Image (cartoon, rainbow over all chains, first blue to last red; front, side, top):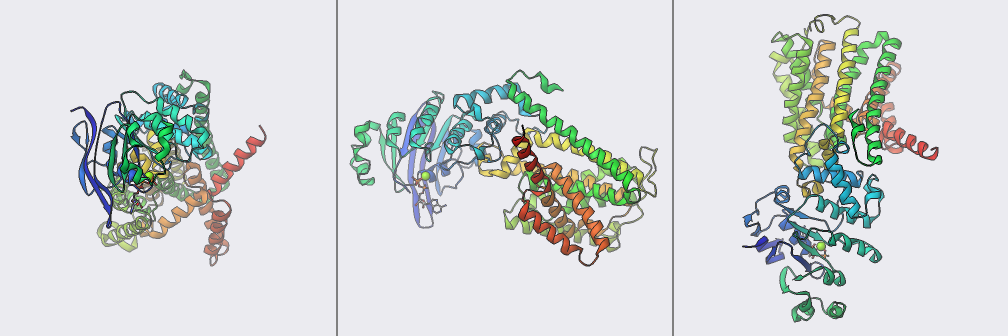
Length: 254
Length: 335
Ligand SMILES: Nc1ncnc2c1ncn2[C@@H]1O[C@H](COP(=O)(O)OP(=O)(O)OP(=O)(O)O)[C@@H](O)[C@H]1O
Ligand SMILES: [Mg+2]
């Protein structure tokens, strides 16, 4: 089977509320998939379940055919499954350079070293500068993250994901909180992701979805109600119903 | 230094140069202060040596609290373990060679660090704090019960270390102990500076700021914290052993809640998350305690309380952190 990533019949409920109902999904190398759905549909919960940040009630998650459902979040990352966060999670007192260097060191199994410093490691520095320059963050390499703009922090989230060299990348609303005039920066960053990487992006901005995705999955009330091409999604009656028509006109933008 | 051989752009090369300079300045400041202490207070060398021993405890606490963000009121367990291990080695097993006693203290501290780390890290927030208090009480009680080895509440006395390196006897004025302490402190300081700058040090700072992000990078938060706890135990254990060697007694107070809480106060006073802060806080607190308790034995705690409130309210980054901020602002406005 060619699926690099597969989710089988994933379920989760909080108390009596079913937030993930029997969700199945698979992705192949190089996929560009958008996961959309109304607020509260369970999109972030899906990412939390898949990455092990939440415990699923039942169902399986597979990477390259291997069942990783019992893995800790840490081991899932090492298996190549990396996520970004809807609300930026970074180290406010550390610089973008330190963030990316730490991710590179971690990927290479060197983050436990108790002597030396990444500034004195030429390959780490070269890769770090490369990633930061790709995302136009080079000039901010040594400014504490707490002091840089939110849009740039969002770019740094993507930079961290790149530095970990995942096989599957789950992006939870990478453009959320970024001024509309700056979303092109995020789009440029997404365009720099390796071609063979499977990317799932959660996004509300349909323009962005249509430009990015070759496939769209719609989640409503915890269940997958559509899985198909971006062209068909706005024509689908159930999708229109789920959104109560709010995005029904978006087809014209595609 | 090897840092000059890097072929990357100029900006990072400049940044590598600076920490080493600060290490050297740090060592120079410790040396100057030590010489100053020796010359100015020749009759107080015992107190100064005790300050050095407590510095190890506060540095050790800084590693887990300041760098990793673990809240603990039980850190004296690591210090006391080192003190008792060195003392018992000397009294019961006849190991009176001072460097061996320090090494035994370091190992016992590491073991105590492992045990308390495993227990304390099971909780988060308040639960963590409560577990740490439980740990220190259990250690205290264990030392109290094992009176055959520890002397119980009478304390462990009769520790008679050999001359240092076979040459320098531990004299009545505490000169040898003081100089021994300074040498150990400088060595520990340099090694810890290397540690906090290392990839592992950076990982630990990340854990303090956002453990979820760290696990999303594929690193193990728990394993890293336990490792830091063991390192922290080595540092505190050396401090405890130094105290045993220099005072030649070990009391239950070394394993007390009060000792733990005071160490935390010293750290907050100086500025958590900085080795300089840990050192400064210890000196200021203990010197203040010495001076004020001599002048006014009844109200010294009140005065310490007032000082603490003032620091927390007006200098939340501690004395060193605030001074460093001011210096940076001054340097920026006068380029
Ligand atoms: N820890 C939790 N405990 C209880 N309920 C939760 C928890 N996390 C999420 N929920 C609920 O689960 C549902 C799905 O939330 P989720 O955050 O996954 O939605 P989402 O699709 O990501 O929404 P948005 O588009 O607003 O980000 C919501 O009704 C939410 O209130
Ligand atoms: Mg969400």
